[in-house]
Length: 480
Image 1 (cartoon, rainbow, N blue to C red):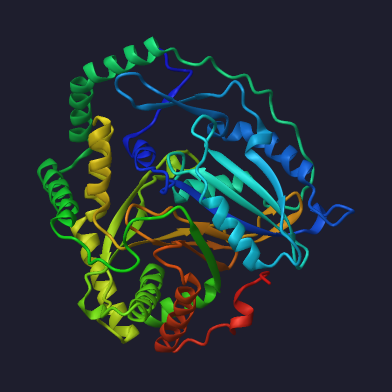
Image 2: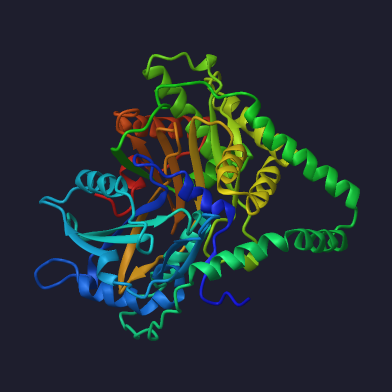
């Protein structure tokens, strides 16, 4: 049966829809800051119509941006289909900050926009063009539902939505001719056929697996150990802390920028990975912050989830989620940054050897054949019980432009999960590392204090590595 007019969501993509509640929104967001440059209007604002025209010209390169969800009757699994009533004006919005247009005001606006749920009856994305920033700058606050992208595909999309040069020409895109909406009976019949063919597909997959595997027994044992390691995460629970609990409707958003060269210098000085450096900085900050919140960090089993991309080279540029993850216990009982780093390095080495990420990936693959009630449970088993999320995504190391205006920073926002009141996301871009901090207002009301502790921890780690880093006033390129 031809399915040219719709696409079925994977189990992992579906899980992000099922997790969503009135206070827990599963969209990935970012605040991008641009120099105003040639986008400046005679009145001093931003050329919103040009921005909208350019976006319209490249939407054919991102088909999901003109598709919406439909749920298969009975099975209640979602599919993507073309939105015949697509309206670009709904998805691209124009606003302005009150003078003087400070970064503090932009952070508050970003938090408010991020706290609003995307409309499930429309394509699941928005972009807010924000003018009025001091220093001849403007911002774009973007929101895309996690069921559409993961961190790596989000970076790919950002490069489609911008250019690598200052070209201002806009070539109109091809006419959008929506495919017909699938009928309920078509979806039901296809769903039934999919389940009936399940055993045949499994047998065919096993044959292919045998062909591609040099040592079948070793490979099966490896995958069995990987699943066992992933499921072991559920055997115990992370410690309860003040940043964990029931989430409210309000968010805080903050950011920080540091030179990528500084991070690399620390990495070389300590003989470790960039991710080890990041987790050591985060460990020091959480140790300080939880002490500030009247806890004894040495008594805590504090765990963070570190998403790991499993996207292959031939999947670059494709939508959807291809991400597994590590569950990392942070050594909050250690005060010395070098000891913290040593423990983290040992932990990540053990995680690689136990193939925990592979086990989580295998669980997520099984989710594709599960009913909805088990999809959510499978995703939770793959994620494990945690206190926070720390995601680090490599981005382009060259400038991106919006119709000639250079993007100077891009601050990511990872969605919060149930019971997790603080998430940290990093994106490297054009020689700098942009940190974004997303927090629940009720659980982490003093987010700026935590950011100050991140900076202090960074300086301690740099000192331990005997690395002279950039002065604070030079770390945030382009930010007022």
